[in-house]
Length: 160
Image (tube, helix red, strand yellow):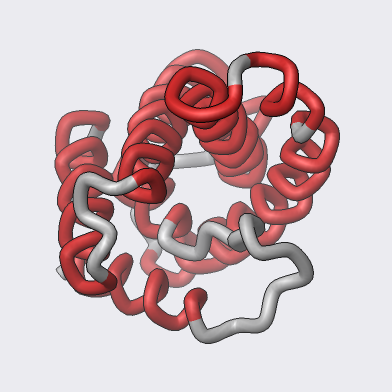
């Protein structure tokens, strides 16, 4: 079910007009945040890998550059969110966990770009924009995830 929801959010996001071609909101991150909190890192990682794989199959980018960037970003974000949730969830809360995930997602994508395509210099020049966009997207998706978690009432999580 969570895979279907994350794929739906991914498809919905692809229909939204965005200010820059490489900028995405990361709506599927809402489901990943939920999965980390409700199910743990193993299930969240499986969900991330399946979402990237299935969405890449649907849009025809499997094993292409955008697949590599999505997979690298998704895996890094999921691991980073899990670590932050385990270590600092009460002070950071759901929004903080989401923000860290967005930052790690964008940094991992820039690392993939640097390794596979441009080298460090050009990818590093994109870092300020990537950090700004990750901050906006991470805060937005974190707020939606917080709202969803409260509505679902997972109980036991007090990291508002």
